[in-house]
Image 1 (tube, rainbow, N blue to C red):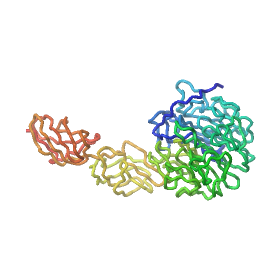
Image 2: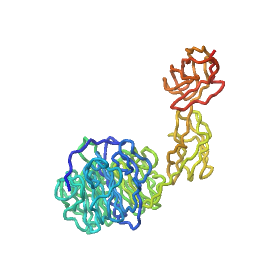
Image 3: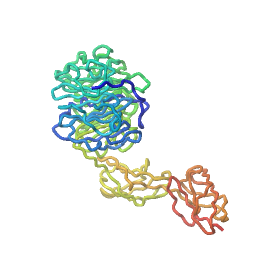
Image 4: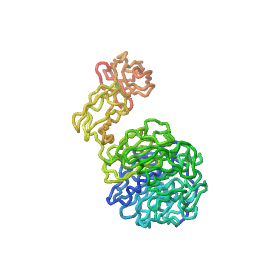
Length: 589
């Protein structure tokens, strides 16, 4: 077992936010519900993949995925999952049915469970690898740069970064090989935060260790501990969840708070409260547990970056805290320091809070998501954020979920069956729209929208589960992806067959003739032109001098050409105008 460096590399991001969350491992409550499942499940993930945390053999700024995908090779026999993360990296864990653990993603501090080394692993582990010497695991929890595993014998193992004592082994020295958390027995659930950790005991007590600058250990102090200490005054707890930092890399860490669900259906919270994430009607930190206002009948809790979630026994969800990206799901971006109802959610069986977004699993094994979506973490085929829940389209058979900073992970008897587009006829039309297009494909059931790029079709008619007739909207010249969104299966996957070309048109050429030597100043009128010299014009050969003063008028100097009549063709964004004799003709004399 080797020691690990404590310095951090720069907080690089892939298409994410200027602010960053560390370890929103709201999976703690889910660990209770889904650990040690009797079924053998596979896993899917989506969102940011910069650090290899999607496990799909990809790393870097082009690895974000806005739809669920199976981790490299397709993990099977999955019993529990968790995504962690912080400004400088995100990693993922999966406990398998045989009691072993797979890890992938950022491994700078050994949090994946193998020694950081040169390629093929190095600091990024881009396909799942087995955590060595770890057996009889029932559930896992991924923290900022550390990891926890609960064993069948009710003890806890930890590995990774340890500068704040978050490994709970009586030291502040990190290690990549799993080792026991000191003195913990009789544990029933775990949750790893950014730099602190929680353990729920079978007695209903809660233990905490690691950083404590915001009182997130709940022991009446703000002094950290490298061994587990009791959270003051808590009895009858049935679930726990710990959050992480939502601060920018240059700002001292804040945002860390903790939640505990009690057997009477109420919720206690402690730690940072800058955004009202403790839910007690204030924005004052607390180093002791305080009651979340007005909550009863709660069956699960989840701590997000600076927001919190509670699942009620009637299948609805309450949320509170920060809401700048719509992570409360209430139809606004206004935060709340007391619980408010998430819009339109019913039949929910599990929740998980991400950095600036949230997930909710429904009884039909479908998954809903809301909040920030800049890295595709909502899994609905877009990178557009939403302040109300939307369907993670096409993902069926979900049994368990985990929301990380901007990466989501689900497991279950999963299949991914979104609608598909196999043909567009015609696949080209004018920029002004109005083209009637027959869309051929599959799973066109309960179609909600048809889009040409970001613009909705002027109208559409569903002819059958394999055919739609849609009228193209106006759009700028260029190729646009046509997408079909359905109520239950989400948004269609991209394909080579779904591109519709919006073409410029040439409606007039004046004068319409000139000498073979070229040099004639020609005014070309039409639609869909790009300003300046971005539009290309071909008079048999391409003109070298072009100036478009509007999308309908360009001045072009005719190039040299042999005697005869040619069509003047406009090209914008690699899409060519139709030859429209005689309006586009130019005659060389």
